[in-house]
Length: 171
Image (cartoon, rainbow, N blue to C red; front, side, top):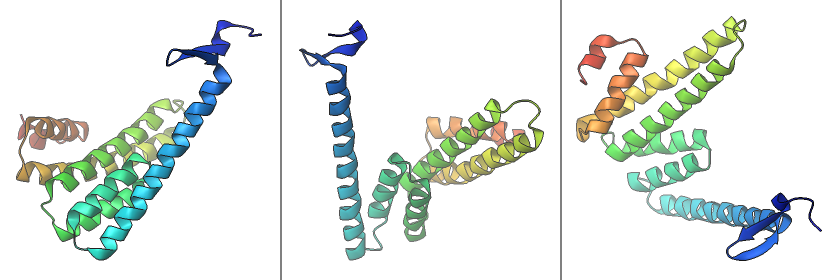
């Protein structure tokens, strides 16, 4: 029946064909998407009742970030920080998001062929823009809750941006 062993899979002790495995994975993904959508709805309802609750905005931002809705995540983190500028968790998580976005642009830069100099400059500028934003939020987070990991992250970012004197502050 099967052309190769790759067309069968052991799934929880049950030997089934690969199409069934794919169908179960798709169903699980749809279920997770459904739960995320439900959670977003509930969080938005809660925010409508308590619009000045920075924690609710940060939780919603985190959920948006996990579902790759970065524009919405950024907006919610910024709302949380408008309410409470020294909110360490929101500052740190927004810094992480900016850092990851900078790395995405850096990866795109690395994948460019050498003759794409105009695009390379554009991608590098985009990466640095996000890295600079990350620095701002990591610094605010570090002011409230100085920890070794954030300190190291700040040092790496400043070195990446060529700001050696600032990097030395975080040795």
